[in-house]
Amino acid sequence: MKYIRVTGGEPEGMGNMNMIKLQQITELAHHLAIPFIETGDRVVDATAGNGKDTLFLAEKVGSSGLVYAFDIQQEALKKTEDLLKKAGLSERVKYFNDGHEKMIDYIDGPVNAVIYNLGYLPGGDHRVTTTRQKTEISFKQALTLLAPGGVIIVVLYPGHPEGREEKEMMMPLCRSLDPEHFSTIHLHLLNKVGTPPELIAVQKISSGPNNVAEKGIMHLYVE
Image (cartoon, rainbow, N blue to C red):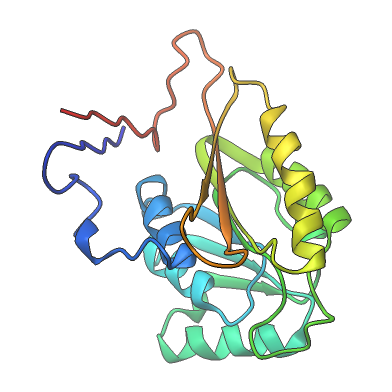
């Protein structure tokens, strides 16, 4: 079992927290995911995009792990594959030129983490974006595939119409999750102008008699 201890100084197990910029929500998503991923794990990048999340996951699962990377745009998937090849990590990844709402067709067992970076491809066609309906289908599949102790991290962009609809879908859905089986948090920037990205994280907790998962539980102590 992993622990993070927050005292007056640096949290154990998270590296140098002073280097994290809270306004960089995707960077924060990576730091949040770190305690939940171990060497040999199977994980999912539901929206490969430019490949940064895929690369992060491939580094964390090690040579014995596996990353499932999905994107409906061939351009995005090629960028991701090129990035992973350059890093020498492409053999740790299975690439799927398909929508994340079909992940359950390709994944035949539990996964330890799923990351979504919703919206459109940076620098790409803004008309090609994730949608409320497909994200809901995919998220429910991810909840089913997730192993006890595993985490789903979703970065939302409510500043554009589809992103706003995705948030309107995700918030009540996450609130409705059974607290005996899931824990969920919502992070958003309070003092940034405009409509900044937001983050939702969901952990599947053990439903056993002790209600304690074998890995990935965060224990926060404030002294």
